[in-house]
Length: 101
Length: 86
Image (cartoon, rainbow over all chains, first blue to last red; front, side, top):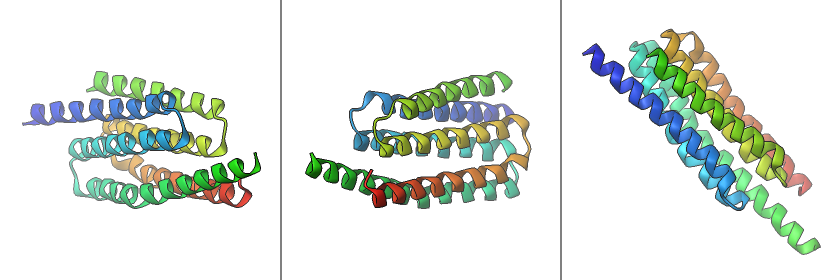
């Protein structure tokens, strides 16, 4: 049972790290701010959630799992808000630049 | 498990370096905010990986603080950019 748990934790950790790397590569490959925001937000969030799940499985007590669940919920609440604000700011800055030039 | 954690931290280090490179090469402030947000996300992922490596719950408070810090930083700079029109 513990061997199965270890393999699950290892697979989740590797998957999470690779998803974070995908997000970072997307930051370089895509052409403008909005595409980069798309590339940066989704894989990074999924990668973080997967790693948090791995940590909850590895630590295996309720106290740690509660804190990890708190981080996951905070991510779900704050990521869309932050992304929306950055997108709006970038859009308005782009509009202002287009008008002045 | 130690090998897996080392490989994961190496992958995350590459991701963080790519974020820093983007941060330095960015043309606009919004671009930098996106790169900084992703950098903090990678750091949070790294702390969670380190918590798996140590098998103790001591790092988890740091995890909560860092993820909140990422949000506050993003919102602050986004509001600044919007007001100044950078």
